[in-house]
Image (cartoon, rainbow, N blue to C red; front, side, top):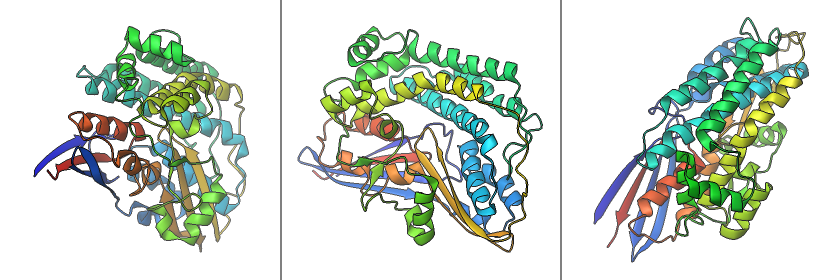
Length: 399
């Protein structure tokens, strides 16, 4: 028997850390994948928040979850404020802006670093660094004393000039590096843009549209609906196992760009033609990238000065949940407070949906042809479903 191992990195992950890992094992025989095993290994990071005060927890969250620190902090904030009974609606637009800015850089990591590498081309760390710097400038442009990520919110004083500059850098940088032309809006434009190959993103999309790639990974796993925080809170509070094996209507689901963009005309056309395979996944990410800059500007237009919510920290008991849409999918937190300290804390992240033992990766790989391109196609499907941790794929040929 021959074994083949391939190391893969989750988008935005420069090395494995506290977040854990994913292992994928394929067993092939008679030219087909006969068995698929997908395992997610996670340290019990949420337990480190138990016994903490809300303020202590908020200082610890970005240290425990450095990869998507802003999104994790925002989900934790929403859960804490729900439990404490705080009304922070005046901060909603600012927080959505912070989440979108981080999502933009996570999408950018994949298309500027990961996708070029898959073509054998040089990654673009300089372009990524400029986008990250612009995204990092948004928090102080909203909250001059950098106090926006604390229970009740901080002193929101938008610097509209600084925000406009940061958003323009994100918009121009993404458009230049990803598209180099107006973003395609239908399948015909997408094919022409991909065939022209003016950027590495276009060249990889050309590969994903090829007949042997476009439908790879398609399966019957449903998209995760945009459930509110309470939907997740009910399930996390009732069953600790939901964190590691989440279910929607008793079945697995997929989350991320494809789940969010199924109604977009371009994505819908590819779904109808190829199913939820690599072509639809790639197009959904492009659609999100094309719309991010406009959404950032729209959120900035709705900003107004705001003060911290009154009554911060007065509640001693309660339970709450929070949810944030990240680049990879829907992230949910739930917690319970007793005597002013966190007694229980549970999280379900996009990786647990997309890399469930019977989830979209496992079902998408089951029974596929085991030819010389299997390793490449599997790696692309893993990247499309976008784990937030390091992933290793092993292919074992039983013949």
